[in-house]
Every structure is written in C-alpha cells, then in structure tokens.
Length: 86
Image (tube, rainbow, N blue to C red; front, side):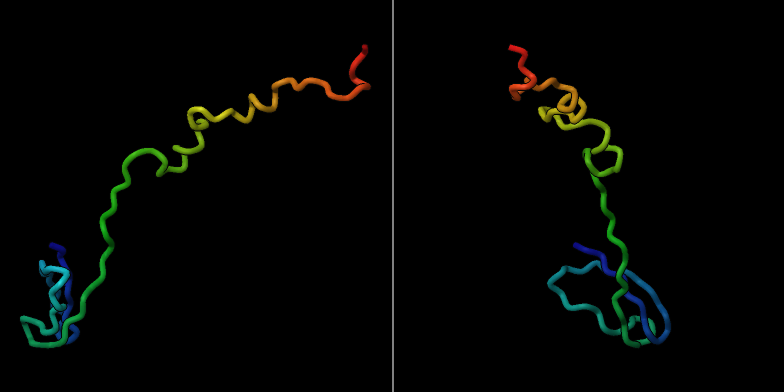
C-alpha cells in the first residue's frame, strides 16, 4: 500500500499515513483538529538496462546495422558510359 504525506494547515504538523488508494484522503489533523493537505513528494525511480544514459546509445551502432563509415567508403560501380573505357 502507498504511503501518503500530510501537513496541517493550522499547526504545521507533518506525518505519513499508509493507506489504500481506494480510501479517502485524511481531512483533520490528529494533533489540533485543523485542516490537512496532502503533500506531494518525488517518486523513487530506478532505470535498469542500457539506453538510459547519453553515452549508452552513442558508443556503437546496434548489432546488424551497417556502420556509417563503412557505407561511405564502399566503392560503387561506374554506371556512366564516359567512365567505361571499352
């Protein structure tokens, strides 16, 4: 179950509560009885595998893809009549 953070608007009391996502948000402070507001915090995210960093995708071409350097250096056969000495 998710943990939600709350802060009281009246006294400033802060606390966390473990609640189901189906339950209604808490509305009264357990200390002073004032109005509560839910505090939004950053979610923890973990990226696993390759492709998440700038250097991962720029080092080499994917397997099976022709490299740009090889495609530029391959000789192409002459197709014009002026290039053919015969």
